[in-house]
Length: 325
Ligand SMILES: Nc1nc2c(c(=O)[nH]1)N[C@H]1C(S)=C(S)[C@@H](COP(=O)(O)O)O[C@H]1N2
Ligand SMILES: [Mo]
Image (cartoon, rainbow, N blue to C red; front, side, top):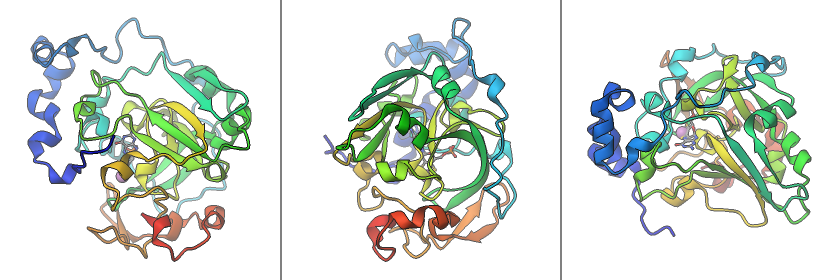
């Protein structure tokens, strides 16, 4: 149910980032004092810390760096790895950009991805076998958040279409719904009850079959770090960043279009399609230009982030606002 709609920007900082108030970084991750503080909040101390000795290893390391696809040339320098890795949106871990250290609490193995719904071959994949069964490639791509910051990043991953083909959707399937993990003892942002966890994003099957639609497993020639949505996240570079759901555990084929996370949180500001278009401003700011992370250089926003050649044909009316927020 969606009866509490309280966007992040409407909250005092104290509510928006409870974890930052209760814990300092070192104590939270490592120290006994941190464990006591966490325990006081109610049993959270039992949550696993990433890197614990018993955690199984990533069995895909030999796949990186993957072969670069030369079709995707950038018109701007790559964003520095450290810059991209320390300025993130990942509300599961808090409402600020500096959550990379909190995200390290997420254990990446074992990890399963359940593919279900209207398909002939539903399957729950172990993440390592899933990644090993798909052809990986690297693409240098522009990435644009709806908040008007942007970056240019080398993502490694596979085409969603290769997974779609493997599970054989039934003709009644119209949408693909992607869900992030739900582990509020690890991701304390998920204790904020006014959001509809787990983070949910979705595409039409046609969008999922598009050449530009990827599931990323790596970045900068290595497996994804937690803050970028390890071990599996969407990369849809013609859409605003919030469509690029992170740390996916479920992929479901449905007939009905779901309500996505940001559509539920603020439906007048964030829609289902979320294609990038400088001609349609966000209700609270302009989308005409974007700020590159690292350099702060401003660049004009491009229709479909410059990927119209691949994706424009999927949207019948480029004058209709519904496709562009
Ligand atoms: N599960 C989940 N996925 C998410 C988000 C989130 O808060 N939770 N934020 C989105 C937004 S708004 C953006 S801009 C991108 C940021 O990706 P990055 O941190 O890898 O740059 O992740 C998207 N995917
Ligand atoms: Mo975003």
